[in-house]
Each structure stands twice: as structure tokens, then as C-alpha cells.
Image 1: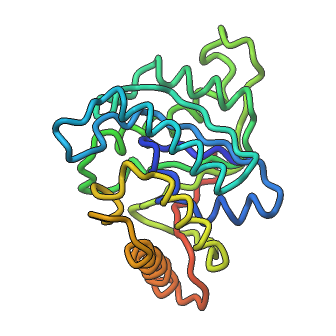
Image 2 (image 1 turned 180 degrees about the vertical axis):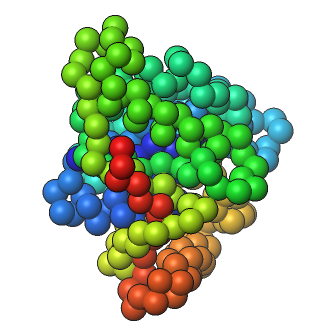
Length: 233
């Protein structure tokens, strides 16, 4: 079982969509945890934040089910841009870890240098700190759940990546999942104006080029995604 923890509704697909699609095909149960509501994810100053949050919640579920039809999506519901790593967040995330018992957790690398978005930094800290809390029984005893220690943590956009996952056969799944985030076409996916086949093809090319660049760094023949792997949890 794998739990991917993202700051915003589309971060998981960007960070590890190909890896999750591959694992799902190998009968791995996939869980998503999305920490914020994505309500600031637009360049349109007239967009209603509440409506955008509702839209992005639906898009996130559709994207996850594209990666894995049986994927379960959990929402922490914090306001976009205001995510903080406090005992409350750590308790809620540790509770989920203890309840579903993932073998692997994937998330943002909080150690990434020069990372601008505070939600990405704080999502990484929440993930790491919650793993510690979930494994040690005297953290949050009010959960009344057994402690749980995952086998591995994979951090995407890592400052010092040391693990490569081959995802060449799953690039289409990653692109299709990203395309479910329709509210993000202009601001994040680089699709402006009328959504055409050529625009979608351009996105597919971009994702493929990024994966190929990773494979070149690793001297691999197939495209892939890279992570910092931590097993001493």
C-alpha cells in the first residue's frame, strides 16, 4: 500500500504520477492525501475561491481514479497558501498513517533549496514529522490506534535524489491524470485558450521530455521519475 501526500490537488500527479500508475498496475493499493483546498490556484482575480476549491476537489478525485480506479482520496482541507506544520496537522496525518498502514509514503522534499511555495515546504515537513509521530506510541495516544512504521519514504523534487523509478510505460497515465485538472490548464499546465488536441499533445511532450531528462541523469534507457529514498524510519 502506498500513501502519496501532496500540498495541492495536482501536486501528486506532477511528483509521482507515473510511479503510482505503475504500482497500481502491480496491484498496489493507492491512497492520496491532499493537504490544502487549492482555492488560490488561479490567475483569474474574479474567480470565486470557494467554487474553485469545490472544483479542484472533484478534479483531484478524477485524476486519482485515472491513476488507479480503486484509489482512495483523503482531504485535510487547509486553506491554500496557509498550510502550517503544527501539532494539529501532524496529529491528523499521523492518524491516517496509523489507520491505513502504508508500506511506502511519497511526498514533497522539505529540504529542497530555494523552494518558494510555503505549502510545498510545509507539506514536506508535515509528511516527515507525521511519520515520526505515527511510529512512536506516545505521540497522540488519543488516536487509540497501534503505532505504524512505513518501510520507505520517497521524496519528489528532491534536493539530492538517489532513487529512480522506471515509468516509461505509464507516461500516458500521468498525462491523462494531469488533464483532469481542468481548472489548472492555463495557470499550471500551459494550456491557454481553446483546449485542442495540439495543446494536449504539447503537454504530453513536456511530460515525456521531463521524464527523459531524468533518465539521462541516471544513464537509463527508459523514462522515469526520481526521488530521495529514506528507509531509516
